[in-house]
Image 1 (cartoon, one colour):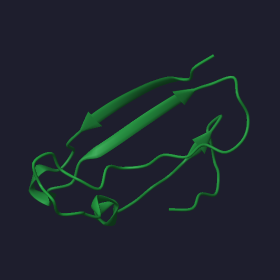
Image 2 (image 1 turned 45 degrees about the vertical axis):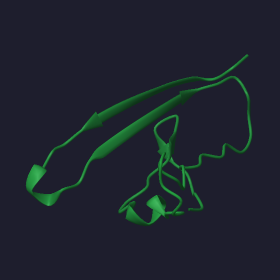
Image 3 (image 1 turned 30 degrees about the horizontal axis):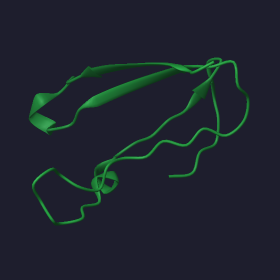
Image 4 (image 1 turned 180 degrees about the horizontal axis):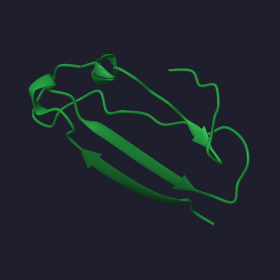
Length: 70
């Protein structure tokens, strides 16, 4: 069964130019989950590192923080 994934995007402080993104993944599978970000923009030949702009990353499982690797 494919996981159920939902996103919530909010801007709590527009002056800081930061966006809060919450991703919820509901799955019956156990084990490692890997997320990736695109490294390109349509129409551009330049490879970019969008992940470098992530300021904070927290992962919770059943309400408990778990260790992650960025």
